[in-house]
Length: 235
Image (cartoon, rainbow, N blue to C red):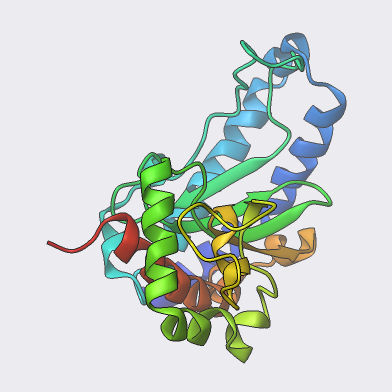
C-alpha cells in the first residue's frame, strides 16, 4: 500500500509542470473565448491542484493536527477575477493560490499557510492580512507585552533563514497608543502580519513538494501560533 501511494504522489506532482504551462498560457490569452476553448485543460489543472492540496493538508497535520478538518475546497480560490471595482477587466487570475488555514478554512481571519503558484513569482507565506482594526491593535498589544517571546520567534536563526523581514503594508510612524521611542516599534508598524519566502518555480514543481515545504511550515507555525493567540484567544 505504501509503495503504491508513493508512486501516485510522484506521478501527481510531476504533473505540476502542466499547472505552470497553463498559467503562462492564460497570461497571454486572458479572455473568455480562449478559456472556453481550453476549459478541459483548466479542469485537468484544477484536479492536479486539488490533489496537491490534499497531500499538503496531510503533511501539515504532522505539526498542526487541526488541519485534518480541512478539505481542498476549503483552501482553494476561484480562478475568476472580481472585476467590478477594478480598472483591470481581464477575467482570469494568472496565478493559483492555496491557503491552508486550519481549522476554519480560507475565509477565517486566523493566520495560516499560503502557497502561491505563478510563473517567475512563486512564494510561500504565512500569517494573515486585511484584519479588522481592533484585531490589529490586539496583535500589537500582545507583541508589546510579550516582546521577548516574539523576538524569540522572528529573530531566531531558523526563522530568519526563510523570513528575514516580517509584516507588510507598514505604517510610516508608530501606531496610536504606543510610545514612539520604544526600541522595537518597527515590530508594531505592519498592518498585515505576514511573512513571505520567495521560491523558484522548479521548487514548486518538485515531486516531493509536501516534504520540501515542511521546514518552512514549521517556522510559519511558530509565527501563526503567536498571531492566533491574539486573533482568537483561547476561552
